[in-house]
Length: 584
Ligand code: ASP
Image (cartoon, rainbow, N blue to C red; front, side, top):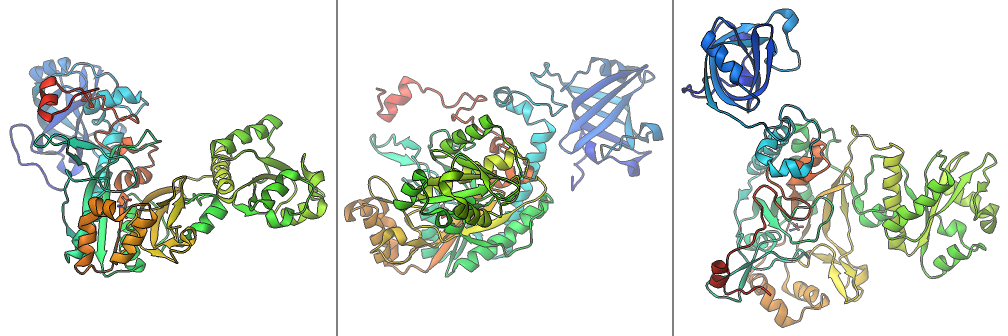
């Protein structure tokens, strides 16, 4: 800890801060019984507080303290005073910072007892997550959770300090607001004063931060809680925390520059070793082509190669009909891997899980020829040309997907990741950070167009060909996770109107939903842009945790339940009546 505690009846020192420098002096510490051992007439207690652990020793020649120690059990709370003494060399514990000393207890004050916890606090053994969440107050006592929350604090503090030093202002925006458009479902809060009207919880402070730019608060940030009522998706939380940033009179280099300086400092906190910025800016099309993902994990190879031109014109009907209808044939050289027939068949399932139909395979023989059910239809010239593109050599396994471009890209992207994991190609010590840029502005849906980022992102290109328009958006991607994204925004009224129009919003709807933004655009809106980073994900990636639940003090389960408080819960009849609500 940075500062000793004020001496009070409970403690005058932090347990984890006592060291050999204090030997010979008296100290009083307070905390929980981490572990207790009886040893040939002596009782040892590892006492834990937030700072760490110190060993207490109870001698029978201090009968009162010794008797109290006999009654101590794990997680009892106490205060103890005694002399800090050096341990004999053979008893030094090099694994803890206080391992050279122990506290010989002269006096102990039991402060609270504890029932036997439902799982051990003193070991980081795996425990059923429902049990951990049900007893989160105990789970948070465990070292792994404490380390994660300490890291989280350091990350957020570094963000605040860096941005303050870059002249940003921290400004809060409302939690009770009206629907903001990030594309998910809103959480709604009924308005008691006017039944039938609703607040929405913000999916992000997007519109407020844009208004702040229009009000002249040119560099804004906030550690913002965001709410999205999405169906269960892997490792998402209905409420999550973003570092939300917006800047006035900027272009991409300004926003990305600030974020690179900030993230380089954040990564350094945990010795998360990434190259020094500037970080590569990867165009979306290239990411999709080579890695089959808009958040590519580039820590390993297995890149995707387009072999359509090399294989075109063969007798293999499947490839020909796909190529003939504007589709693609793409492939991965999976390297020298021998998979059994059933393992190869199993790859179809992998591809199907990622939206594809099937995968074709070939293995390269010593002569360079392909052993494959499809080789004879393709013919040696084509297989040789494709083999060259794939850098194929003897023993390599080649995997092909033929489909429409986006489907093939995603299917191979999913296959690539799965193979990377299965073959153990992903090293935890190598990290990759880059930007993805030049996203399509709009995506086609059955009903028309939607904005790929959000409708306030500045487009490039012509509205005559919306499918070809790009956005001035950017995502930051680390080890295959999207840690955040943002864009340069629209600051011209007519462009904003055109975007709304293309999204199928008529004048009236645009006015009713976003009238305040359209109004603001009429009164001198500066060019502006910003970004938001998912803090939960940043900390999880840095802490090497699979789930963001492990870096949130009080998370909910994947289905949105909080086993600790029992939320969400029913409300009583009176509350419903007050709100003017009736359940159907
Ligand atoms: N508000 C956006 C989001 O939450 C980020 C941004 O455009 O700044 O995804």
